Amino acid sequence: MKNIKIINYFMLIGMLVLSTSCDDFLDKKPNLSLEIPESLDELEALMSAENQINQGGVSDILASDDFFHTEQALQTESNEQYVNTYLRNFIPEMYGDRIMPEWTIYYGKIYVANFCLQQIDNINRTQTNASQFDRIKGNAFFLRAYAYSELLKIFTPQYSEARLDESSIPLVLDTDINTIKDFAPLGLIYTQIFEDLDQAEILLPTIPEIRTRGSKSGVNALKARVYLTMKAYDKALDAVEKSLAIDNQLIDFNTLNPGLNLPIVPVGNQEIIFYYISGTYRLLSYNPECRVNLDLYYNYDENDLRKRIYFFRNSAGNINYKGHFTGRTNFFTGLSVSENLLIKAECAARLGDMEKAFDALNELLSSRFSTEEFIPISASEFNDPLGKILLERRKELVFRGRRWSDLKRFLGERQEDFPLTRLLGDTLIEMDESPEAFVFPIPLEENTNR
Image 1 (cartoon, rainbow, N blue to C red):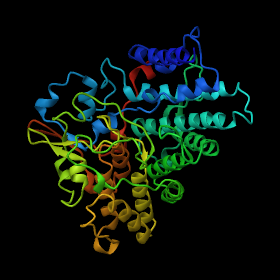
Image 2 (image 1 turned 135 degrees about the vertical axis):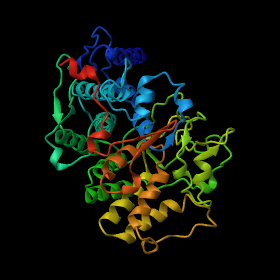
Image 3 (image 1 turned 90 degrees about the vertical axis):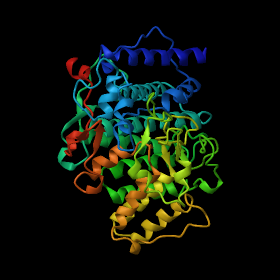
């Protein structure tokens, strides 16, 4: 009966998502005749359904400069949304008659989190069930915060105090789908994320039983990620050091076999703090026509093992990506020790502590270079030490879902990253460099149904 309830509940969420091409997802009413999960075991099963809970969108990777298509390859793609996203044609009609994945995916997760928080209030916390009770409630807060952080990345401009009162996205904190939620001020969304994470940190274990669940380490890693996007470098550094005090293991790339199709596997990978993957498309990932940005590829030193672990040359001579932390063709977009070290390095550098910054960077690079060839580096070797750290961030986190938010915060600061261009035949398409240009349009139904 428990499994039937869980399946029925996800069928409900699936029906809501699939109907969004005609109606507003946030305006859908659930079929209350379905059996609803009620016990702690059922709620935990709901929160542990990896394919629903731990998979997000991929539009930001599609719009980034990690890869490119030829005009001939793009002409084989019939998905209007894919083509517009790749070309960064961010117009209200860009999604065509298809569902906008990120909107429905993340609000679907928010609905699940809200449902669990609602249901768990009907269960008594006892000495016997306290551990499971806290874990479920903490995961719900963590999941909701994670989903809102992803929505901010896609649908709102770069954070600034001047924008805090601007209308952003709906803030949904309950399961009432009869009421259309207002678009909340941007600052309120950020406030809710940190309130949720504070609650989650109290409730969650230091380290999770399995890495598809939240933890105190994951909470602080996510806080650090969000603070970094806000350019709150002191707060990001404080949070990331708390996470690194718990999780600090890296994969030694010297132990990996670059000859494998997927050299990195998630099982036993302690570098992963929170396992989360992207969606994918036919032309993405292992498709030969998903060609890696060559300017990026040639930035890897020959002794940098990532050049062979992350990439391969296909039979047509093109460079493709294979460095998935997922053991499959979906991109890993979750939280990791490697990302944490890069946040620590960048924040320390921006705060003037170059010794701490390069200690963190060297800790990462020592696991990525051939043992015999690695030589620690120092800030004094570079005219632009911060630029070196950001380049290593670029190289380490390729196809990891961080590039879009980085580009947003680098606007007006790091000219080497701009302008963003796409070459379509003989036509060079140059992207506007305003903060608004990096914002995906909210699906039309969200406005027309109000």
